[in-house]
Image (cartoon, rainbow, N blue to C red; front, top):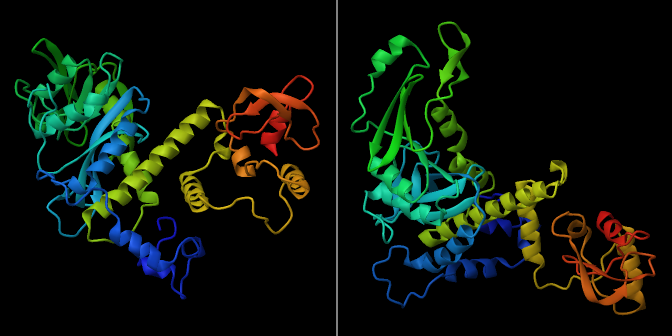
Length: 431
């Protein structure tokens, strides 16, 4: 219901526009019954005025898995909107977001959009245990930054809604260098925008201060307007050139840009990348229950996380990009696998077998019981197929091979020859 979108869920089973991929999986009444009765917590238990009580077990289940993922050096924190226009005390309004109305989630992710932690805004933002109270926005950053290991060279980026001197100091004390845009800071007397405009685009000023034994550098750069940025690890140098459109000259011109601005523009867009990936194939199922909207959003988030990890593993294994699945194919394969869960895959199929491996496997099935082999899509996905030595020697499962071997594929769980004379292991995964 995200790849093939229809206005109402009942239309997937209707005669006018029936979708076999959905209607053949389960009856319409079964789907509506599951949707009506699905819950994630015991409603009879005491909730202690927790506004997220309905989805608290779901949050507690997802967070440890996200936080256990390996982290890149560059990390960013920003807010994310879950689209919703119904009535809810949790609903927020952010005018600069593509979806202006909805639930607000603060997300910690890397530059590609891989989520490492999140925090749903429910009206209050208390500081984490053992941390100072530096305001609602700063407390959110400290809470999400708990999963970042200090003194491991991770760099954290955020915008001016979170930034404050107290936040930079608190993060520096934990060994986390930070960079972010800031509003007018106390102790920094930069020139006005009118004065910088007279000097021309690309003009910048830099100041340095020490707050509680933490060195902080602040830079004001004038492009179309003034931009203030502060950091505990970056500065204005070295200065690079960027291209900007000049209205008077009607052509692109080169403008000086400080290094601290370049770093912010390059590594701050992680949450925006996540939003874009989720928006491609978002689950559109209307419901008045707020926990349904959160559940469907978390399904989209988990699928995007899984696809980004899949791409990371493929790149580490030097799999060509042309052979890697895009997000649509990856999501469709997950749906297909879930639909096949619990079904008998050994049933006979019509048509000719697609490869020699499957043809020989069908011949063995006619002679007697035979151990199942994975499909061609699984054999050729080039992910996780590692040879390992088994304690028992068995016949090689590659067609027309009569040898016995102790090597087997860790993923396919079949024995395959692997020596200098026979390499059934590679041939099995190529056909």
